[in-house]
Image (cartoon, rainbow, N blue to C red; front, side, top):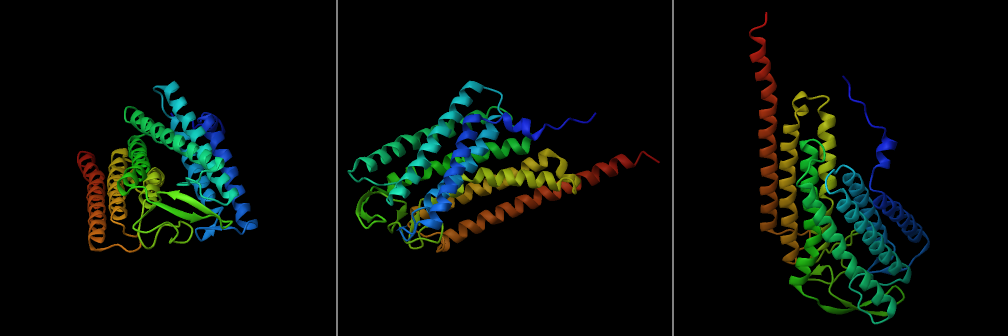
Length: 332
């Protein structure tokens, strides 16, 4: 008997609707930011004022779409799951909306402690929105621990990915408090002074950054482990899809236990990468200027992933041959 495949359009309709609405609105903000990049020549921290809303809009759109798909796969605590997804959707669109609004004003969205009403309103929304995003994601991650969301490989990827995303959200909160809130004065796109309190940089103010990401090249940067952790779930989901596709060619990959082990190895390695990047940033070290201990940690992680993966692959490739040999003996 062949299993009927679900109609993609029908499946899409089951996704969490508020999160899908949020995804659509965020995609619209991305398009607005693209137009702004073309038509608006104002600069903030040596880059277009519209780069930040473009990055945040795209990142949030991808993440909310992922959550919308994931929550449709959960079958326990459906009412709680729906409210958590809705809270994340609302907080996400408000946060990115504030970033786009600040870009339109030509000023800072985060760390802006100016006394004008608009800047104070921006900080109020961000201050309340970030905890909502964090705790909604955390509770969803906990709920996924107690139910299946697909086969073993997919479930493992989602559990590890949500844990990595929660850790990525935690990094700026923990390290930001550890580093402290240094007061300084920035300059808006219009040349006006802006009172700033805190920042992403450790050991060097924001603004001495790489192209596009603007991650610091002269000091540590909280955004590096934050970004890598937040999007670990997407790396693991792509891995699951790749392993499933390769299973068409290699029989040993059709065993979901083998795929789950490989996903688990990459998830452990990725977790070590996030931890290493957090440690690097906390020491005020730029991503592109690692010292000896950082390189040693990265080499140890790479060695672990390669050796563990090789062990799983060798064992999986031998198993079908052993079974085939055992089964072939009695037959003539």
